[in-house]
Image 1 (cartoon, rainbow, N blue to C red):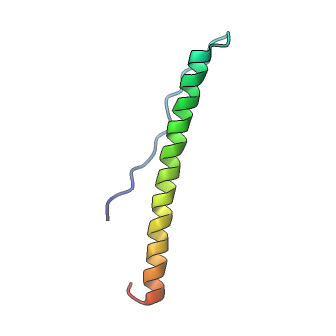
Image 2: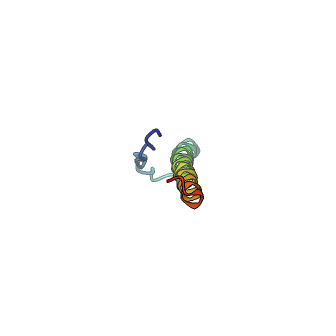
Length: 61
């Protein structure tokens, strides 16, 4: 089995005093990418736990 990579929070920039649409879109994209990575890691962990539970149930562990 391969290792599940750890996630690291994105380095978010401080918001400008005035609203900036481009900066806001960049901020949302940074968060979207981070949470997609967290979801992917969680799904991989769940799949491995489910596989181990199945192997344990079968008695092959």
